[in-house]
Figure 1 (cartoon, helix red, strand yellow):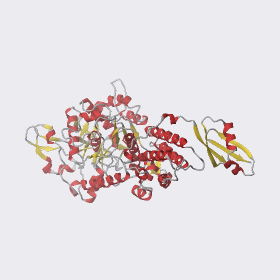
Figure 2 (cartoon, helix red, strand yellow; figure 1 turned 45 degrees about the vertical axis):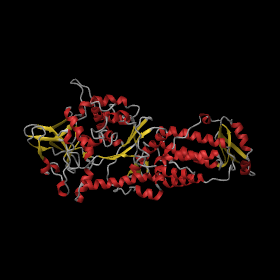
Figure 3 (spheres, helix red, strand yellow; figure 1 turned 90 degrees about the vertical axis):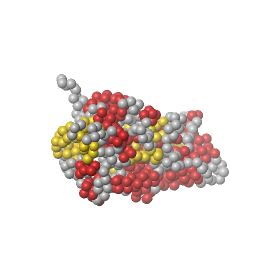
Figure 4 (spheres, helix red, strand yellow; figure 1 turned 180 degrees about the vertical axis):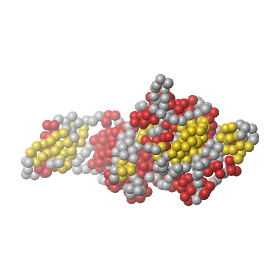
Length: 614
């Protein structure tokens, strides 16, 4: 299936819509194990929803402004865009290799003028409403990165990026008045209680910290400090005029593009490197036409990510950041997947900006995301992966060694999406062997041949329809590890069933469709080996016959001294006495007993009988 066309949202109104959003990556090196987990999770959901008939919007982009690229550029003596765009190309190639079904037609990069033009537009709208202001205040100064930090970026007195001890300085800075929305940020959490993790809502409530006292309610929350004294960010769209004061750059003059700086010009001091670009700083006042100077601060990159999910809705649109009608069709996002570390930063900022746009009549909901899923971390030997600890795992090397689908399956099978995955306990090699067994399902035997246990074709059909039903419900509930286990169980049932015939053909085709959610490459290979010419990713979800979900017969496993010796099909309501009687007369049991007597029989109807020899 074409990655640019086959996974693009139709957006034609013919089908119900689901907007699936993944926290977009920062382009720092290649993909890592954390990316492998979050992309595997969201891809399963996207593929499932498409197969169920939804028009799915699953876009991709990069949060490409920020300090890591700027610091790397300073070390290398090059422009930050060189480092940034090289990493984006590397990550994009890895995402394609990983088989993620993104809609690449909506791709965005926040460092491109076509994007940050609208970040500046957003600043202007906040300024006009009194929600963006400049004031002298005591701020958090990071001496390592030589820039101010928002309160949310200071952890135990240290810069959350570089670890330097933060000091207080008095500077004139730009703020967004998040405190004006403090009550609504709290009260609107009632809209999220059914879709967001309770602990995230608790973290936000505690961060906002509303208290009632004799002088009226007070808050722990401070206004959002958005000024940064660094180069690689969206310039603040304001000029300072000696006669007119602060003046917004008119919309038709946006974007205010960054001047080209590199090498020593990027080295930060006590002011932004932009202050040294005098030809860029000197300008004319949009109001009076007299000489003026541009503001030399850039915006915090959390401003870029506070609204990017809306730009995905209207790629290439030039009359605004997005079409309001597109927002009305897709928002709020059905599901947002990303790390819990953003609970009191990005998620809070996105909620604030969405409420402002809602008040402007541009979006249909005061909340940006109906549901939130926080995936766990991928750790190694009980600890976060770190070069200094020597326990890092190279994703590309794991893909080379085991194959893409085996790595995807191993991550998904390791536990619930919300739990941490310890790679030391994961076995991608076992998944590689499982996928090899799956491919052998396409090897047909003699027509209508039946295996030695004589499993009836009707039993296999019931197993297939039950598995399709179960995987459907498990994926929708986010229990992806259990869904993989259920698929593996079905593969075992198919292997034990008839080796040819229409029931087997139906079963193997169903395996391919279900497998395509988790291991798309292996599923397509199996699909083609069955003689199918259309992409398996384009197949609708198999229909389930409700009559076949009624369990009238089940497979009972027969053990002798704990070892499996036989299987038989029995009524689902079989009694312990009848099951024991049927088992003791089975030839396989008689052979296994030999000349030994039966000491006792453990019966767990209808699924298990264990005959213990004396």
